[in-house]
Image (tube, rainbow, N blue to C red; front, side):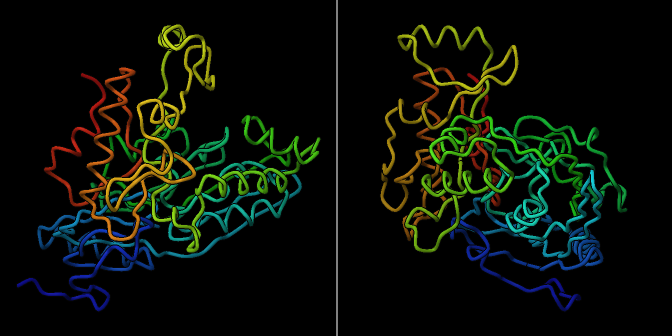
Length: 365
């Protein structure tokens, strides 16, 4: 039997309370890492005992297997935020375990712009660079200066500059070529403007309806929070749709040629948001509805949010398998109808050899 040398390492800890979906099995071993030294210890413990190390942040973007994790789950709980400001610039060094939205609120109160459209997103700060969190025309990479992390291959603390993070649409090197290599401990943001960003149609409409002509960053935050509430995309214990991970799938990006072809097939109407001269982002929610899955769709204890078809919801007693089965069904029907393979925004823990998860990551035929 493996020994537990560190007083913070616990056995057989149920993981569902640490996730917004509220489901999943137990971690065979578990540690709440509150310091960088804790992180270094946990990494070495996993190596010494030949067990996988699974890093868990705010739990807002993860589906944990019903059978749990036969390894060491490390929850990043490092706290702290340092700010440096002058007339033209605000710099924040934020620990990875801090909740995301209070940091956004803090920045908005300074009047600096750069994070206001990312209001209301659940989860922790350390998770934001990994998937390059974005919403309403803004991405976290717009404001990240660098990240601090433990490089598992070299067992040392490193700082990685923004240009070396490999940021892309809902992606980064931490989610692609370097999965599992870096354990993020701090994120450093640099904000240089006090001008708000309001370009997304939903946000512009909300502001116009309220008669806001020259919106401040606080105005945009209010707009984004209001819009997210109507879609069930903020955590609210009184909301029956809150047991989700928000958007389960990423909005697909297609080239102009494919967009034009699809527009012709759908009698001239196909919603899209132009990302560049070559690319258009299509709302995954629209594709899902067109494939026959409407808001409120239900399969037993799982279903789609009554407010937004992009969120798969635990209705109370769902299993992780039921969540995965519905996601697979949605992806398959969207692919059959449109030839577009939706990519999951969710992260899956404890499904290492699961064929359904392999299908969810499949990009084409």
